[in-house]
Length: 252
Length: 178
Image (cartoon, rainbow over all chains, first blue to last red; front, top):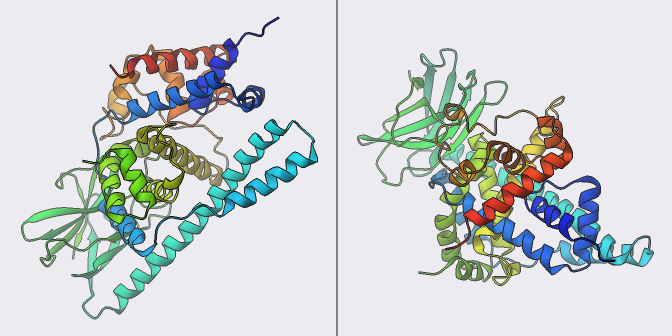
């Protein structure tokens, strides 16, 4: 008597979107471990369909500081190496298999997934610490820089109690430190603008933490022109090319 | 112009220029998706950074015969954004996993966050029947599993599975290359 494959077609689709759990997930992982090409293909096709649809919308430029960080980091690191956790992962998986508590394929699939997750979390934590350390070094350099000036910003109509300071050095950019900011209205974020010459530049968007505090690292002006004005406004979360919302912080 | 797979292979060799071009090509396409899952722009930017750095570090493992660059990157971006969203929820005591954000606003478009109104998946999703779209958005953007969706929608598990299956079948048909 042949067993219907139909339930696995459903499991494969749901697995691709991460919705499978419980007994269904265990059954599907065990089934996948048998090497079912049909299910593997269905998962791939579904992931591919989701990816195509996800990338079909209008593009939205991310904050420029992300690119700057990545480019700087890539220049400092050499060619990417192989992941060090892999041999360790395989060793643990092999030991688990040797224990023979479950079928080899099932145990391998389960442990690889879990250890891979742990390794990703550890790697992500290390990267966060490294990034924070790099941020602190940059902030220290900014404080040491004899050309750094401090600009005080005072709360305006949109955030009357807010206070902020911006440490700014023309060649190195700056650091905004704000307090007493109210949470932005739904769908809005705070945006920092720098004006060098006549055109305002979007220098970054942010939302304060629960205590109303915010810190924002700002890249230097690419034009090289000295920044004359710094201000913070409330803008749509998707960003805007020019300041259009209520002013939250402006120079004294 | 290099295609995505070529750029990934060049990235694997430590080509900084290829990495920058890969970022320039894909970051504006990936960022709306991350922003939809993580509405805080600081979180979204951090996540975007992690996704591209991880992609660079794992570029050697990329297999063009098995997965397209789009799927390789989008799958990772969505997974990392969901992980961050779940971690943030765990940190906030009392907020159950998969609870509260309005992730299925199609019948009330004005409630969508500005800037993502017409983005990510919208056109494909809008062609799905509402019950299927609702279940799929809860899974895709909300990171909910079938059991969590069942609890959220107060529908039988079988119904939720069927809706998701039909939605994904139709999505595959809709975005199939001509």
